[in-house]
Amino acid sequence: MGKRQIVLLALLPLVVAHAAEDQMRLADRMLFKIPELTKPGACVLYREGGAGWILVEPQYWLKGTVLSAAPKKVVLQLCPLVTGKPIEQYSRDEFNRLAKAQPCVAKVENSKEVELGFIRFRVEDWETPWAKTAANAGRLFQGHYLDQKQQKGLELELQADLLIPCP
Image (tube, rainbow, N blue to C red):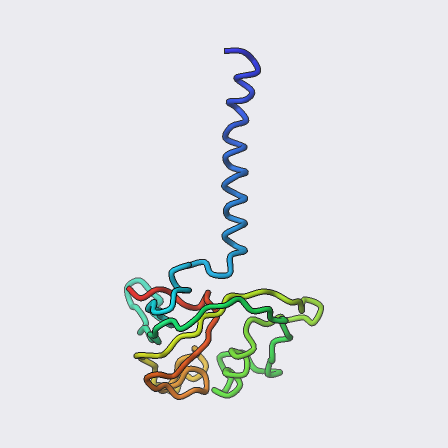
């Protein structure tokens, strides 16, 4: 084996690694990282909770059927913050205001236009927390998604990254 062949064989893993890195960068740029979520009629799930290994916290969810999927350009605005309050002390209205502004930025100079994937779906079923302590813990609370009362047939549009396929 000549020196040239040895050098080529030594460089081969670097070329393969570089190609894999390019593929990972491409996946990061994809608006719909789970393509099956974009198909009308597909079952989607929005979930919150379920953390822990031994003492697992309850899991809450929204389940629905995809109506449409589309990319949208969004300008990232400044996050609405309540001065002097950590998020754990936000009222439900304050939390909803922050959640509706997502994604947002902490500094005005970070504001920019981005393209995000959105999925419109029809709500079919849900499970939400009812304890007052859950008021600022998530988007689901007392039969609502943020400030929208849940009912069968309600149409919601969420960022694709927030949804997963139904099991």
